Length: 446
Image (cartoon, rainbow, N blue to C red; front, top):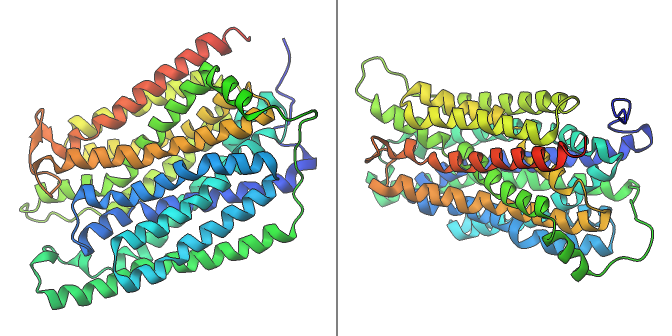
């Protein structure tokens, strides 16, 4: 049996490029975290339903879907570095569009800014993930990607702190129980102020991204190339579609991203439902949901570290299955235990789902050539569309009884609790995928 324990996860000769590319993982983590709370912020200040507000996620993750394949085809012809530069440029432009959006006070304009921003993120993720996988031996590829992805939660935590202290704490509308009951003049003044608060972090982010653009522009990045003639795009697609592990992995990624965004987006509505249920309880203090979201991100970070370490002695498929089953247990808590202990379940999901994205990514691309990985990476990045579609479906469930979050009960539990049946379905499939990979691929290859 071949000993892989001595194989370095990252060799010294690619250490600097690895660090530079890894830094990109924090950038889309920041964008993800700072955007999730905006669903609730836009809902209140622009007087939207849960379904309408979920268009924030539709724009954000829909941009990934639309641009991932063009990005992959572009980098198939050109270098990873050029792809990264284009990605950073689009990222900056999308963030800076929040300035005119705040002036016009149009919800669609903010969504357009997010849409363009994620065009850039699609380029960055399509380049960074397969590049990290290619920076060393195949047997350590999944572990290497998990290591790089461990920087992602740093961006998540930074984004959450910015959303908390520079957005939510300054929103006037968030301090008003019934914002729509105010007269139009007062609402208009508050709307102008609050939209400016929402705008500022994105404008500053856009300027920071331009600085990162310059950093990559002046640094040399080695380009990994396969020897021989590049196969036709048609043949590449044919081989990808014929690879069952890859195809099932794309589906798993769609469901994982959907579950992640549903969990992180609707934790705010989940906490709101608990507050409403205890509004008349003497001495009850409103839940500081940002504290729970912060704990969730810390657990997500811890889960990435633990998962990366466990990959040294446990196969990716088996580990993926184990974490998916653990996530399912936490989701069941969120559904059937109402109140604060149900919220603990929502928070715990983050630990269990922490390693899923890079592990699914690594499993799906592990048997592919570099050429196939470049195009195959697009399918896995396009799978991020799950973060657009599934939260909107969850919003529809939450709106079953009206604009509130606990207007009715479904199967004996509040509508917000019942809506978490969607993440449960997602994790059940991911557990099955991990089991299938373990039985059909990893056990055979031992």
